[in-house]
Length: 185
Image (cartoon, rainbow, N blue to C red; front, top):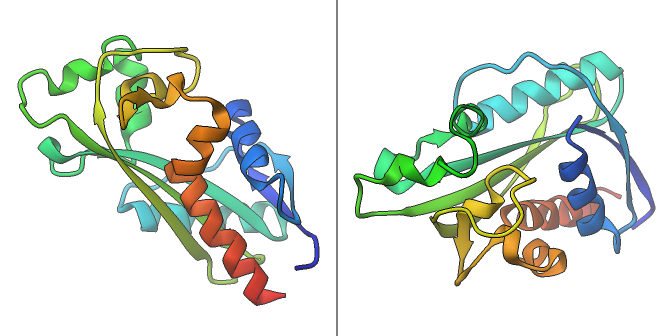
């Protein structure tokens, strides 16, 4: 696969570092751009496609956008793409209390990347999912809900970065993107 440079649309330094680490052994190079995009309401896929189209129009070139969700089984898959607002309102230390009245603490971390070649092009979506449970915060609390999402006995925050990247929703979605890029070259 020939090297491919992508405009990764994010203002989140932690997300950028994680994506760069996951892609480090691939020929994909990221150019980060912080673009303030209007975000529609809808399904995970609708939101990602719309963000990609808006970003491609804004930068007038190829873009990669990402949307991360957390879906609680007890809430019928909510908060889903709106998890950012729940986390901001409650804080990571109290986030697990959302499920206090429910026996089922299971959740699915979902990462959706959308690649758009340029303005007017149809985005291609890549999604990764990881099953876990919501727990009281453990480990560093500086990256979203990582401290509250437990996978096989450890929260994402407690895991070594390489271990998390190997099993995470983001790592799984990026693996699909890299495979698709190999086919496109």
